Image (cartoon, rainbow, N blue to C red):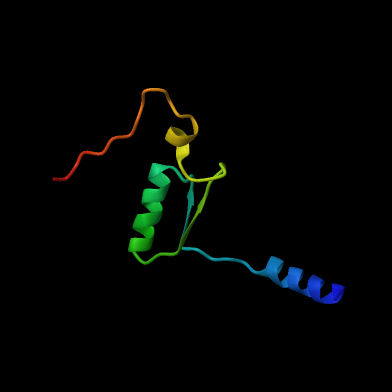
Amino acid sequence: MPDTLIMTERSVRDQVAEYDAIVIGAGISGMYMLYRLRELGMTARVFEAGTNVGGTWYWNRYPGRALRFRNAD
């Protein structure tokens, strides 16, 4: 059993993922960039230092500040 486990660990470790683009930061701009890249048919991956997406506006939670989008209607 241990030999099988070692073989599995090696094969996973030796695999290298290839992407057309890598996005650093999963804030608003990073998520939009991921959306646009995938819309263009590219493979992409986002890396975020935090535990989840959100970026500065989520993590710092500035009192009284918000991101507002104008309604298209």
